[in-house]
Structure formats: C-alpha cells, structure tokens
Length: 321
Ligand code: NCD
Image 1 (tube, rainbow, N blue to C red):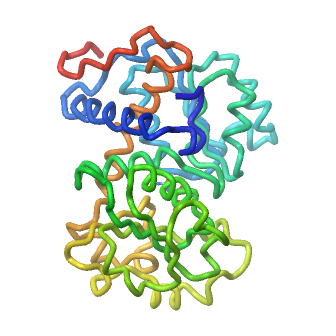
Image 2: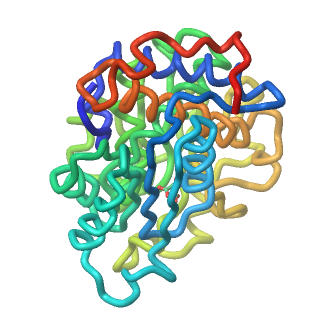
C-alpha cells in the first residue's frame, strides 16, 4: 500500500482483497458488546469535512474510535475555514498535532491529493468533488461480496448522474478490478464523454437492464450542476427511475445514499428486501477500519508499521478498550 488512499488506482487487486479480509475480521469485532481494539491507541486521526456528510463522516469517526485512536472531527461550518483560512494553512495548523492520518472531504477534485503532498500523515480521500470516493467503492464491493460470494462476471449497472459522481468513478474501477462487468446508464448529458475508457459499457436508456445482477442507482447531484442537464426531475424519473416495474425480483439494488425518494428510486424499491442500502452503511464502518489499519499499522510503507502489524488483528481475543 502507498502512504495515502486517494483513488482506487492506488490499490492493486491484492490490496483490495486484503482490505476486504481485514474488514471481515473487524465485522466480528463489531458483533461484540465492546466493539474496540487497541490497534491505534495513542495515535491521532483528523477528519476534515468541507462538504456535508452523514454516513461517511460518522463512519470514519466510529472507525477511528473503534481502533482506539484519538479523533478530532472538523466541519468547515464553525471552523476557521469560515473565516477564510486556506486548505494549506488548515493542514499546516493541524499538523501541529502530529496526526497519523487525515481524512478529507472537499468539493474540489484533487484536494485530497494536495493534502497528501503537504502532509506526512496518511491521507484518506473521503470524496473530492466529482473525482473519487475510494472508501465508498470498497464498502460497496465488500457489501456485494458478502451477499454474492465471488464477484467474477457479476453484471453491475450504474444508473443516473454518472457525470457528477465520484462514487461512480471509484465504483467503475473497483467493480471492474474485482471481475464485474460494469455498464453505466443515464441521459447522454449525464454520462461523461469517453467513459468507456474506464472499462465499462454505456447505455442511454434502461432497455436491457433486466440483464443486470445488480442495479446501482446514483443520486442526482444538483449541487454540482451549473446548468440544466435534464429537462426536469419529473421527466428524468419517468425515463430512469428504478421502481417496482423496472427492478426484477432477482436483482439486487444499491445506492450510496442519500436517496432522493421519487427521483432516482421509488420508495417501494428503497424499502424492498432487494435493497442493500442499509447494509452498505453498516459496511462503511468496518471497511474504513480496515483502510485505516492498512495505512497505519498494516506493515506497508505507511508509518507505524511494526507497532501492531503486520500480524492480523486477533479478532477472537477480547481486547481491552
Ligand atoms: C455520496 C457522496 O457524498 O459522494 N454519498 C456518500 O458518501 N455516501 C453520494 C452522494 O452524495 O450522492
């Protein structure tokens, strides 16, 4: 593993497999009454969120706490960022605490990569503009593999606003790396040009979606749309909404959240047993624990190797909190 996790391309398939296995062992820890291991005791993790987040910020915070790290979580609202402090100055300021890891979410593509250059801490990209969201893709792969076993040859359709979606960009890479056949689908205005080069098929309509084993719906990213990309949300929903008519009983449904009910998904499919949406959220904690473990204690080039690693966490031995 490299020092940082900025994009899925930073990971080999073997890295991904190792993270998934580690996450499995943390899932066992999460099933106990005391859900903590001492792996990162005495080390500091800074969560820096410059964009709204419910799932990603709470699961990164829980992940670091369950590894016994000291955690500082900063949201742009209410911090000195509100007073005009630059990203570089903020990172320099936080470096005074000598963090082992910085987790950053930013509306700007490339922000996490910059922080990785400015800081000697391990940097984890928690979503940078429309670039990438690698831990989301890892938790999606983990969730799907838990449900289906091997992913080789599994057909995944990613439907919706692919153009503005960092989840789609990371997901295409991660699913493909695990052997899935990925197709992206949406209105031509919301599909990036030459997206095929990422290793996926492209469809402009839902015709043929019956072939998919997994339908992965995306939120319409209104906050990233400068112009009108669809005539109206009603017309978008008519052509692309996944509802009870379009989802076959043997297909699985995924979505990174937050869902706009009645836009990309109908309420009935969100609440159906085919939906893995809540499982995805639960997977977020153990997969982010595994990522922090790999970067900080996994025996790779990241600092701290050897302190508790490279041995796997002994999930069967109760650990003091
Ligand atoms: C996504 C994000 O913020 O990139 N949500 C998430 O992290 N679970 C997707 C979205 O906002 O639509």
